[in-house]
Image: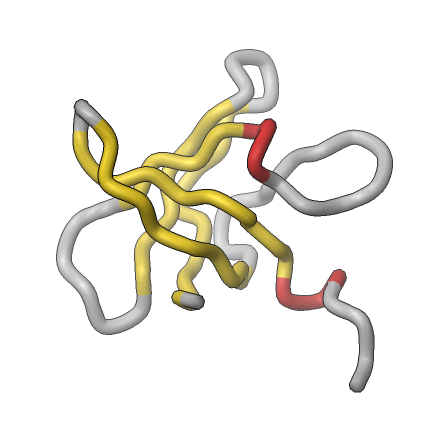
Length: 73
């Protein structure tokens, strides 16, 4: 699982981009992959964990989990 920071996220369009830590380039993030209850959205600067998959137009994030929303262990 990778960690990164949300670069930007457009609520109206339901997508944005994540900057992975220690990597060049951005990863596409769609609202349907955000793992949280209620309204699924991300905010610029927010820390997230995610899986990276390669799609037809480049890399995209799956199983996006905001760091502060993760259950305590």
